[in-house]
Length: 88
Image 1 (cartoon, rainbow, N blue to C red):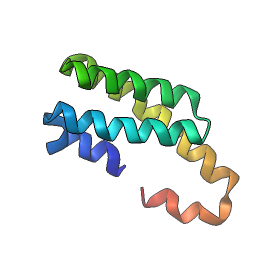
Image 2 (cartoon, one colour):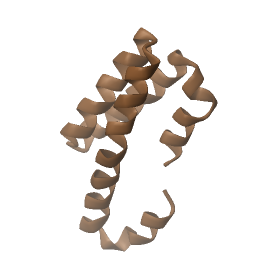
Image 3 (tube, rainbow, N blue to C red):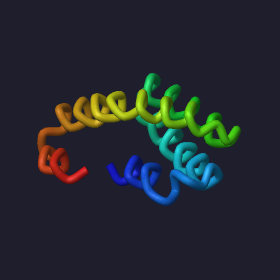
Image 4 (tube, helix red, strand yellow):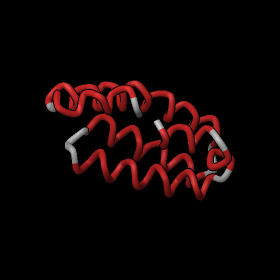
């Protein structure tokens, strides 16, 4: 997704920018009730704020499949938006 792409790109080298992106993403996950995804993103945000790059990368790696499952579950519930499944 665009968020993970930003974290992998230039933003990933800036812990402050990564923390802000992760904070926003975690907030969105919380709004949708995606508890596991939210927890993984909050953990990643903490590692970004601490400047712990290896732990940040590990947390992001754990969050990716959670994001994919969450996204797929939302799209499965809203088949009218199934075309978005190939866009993100």
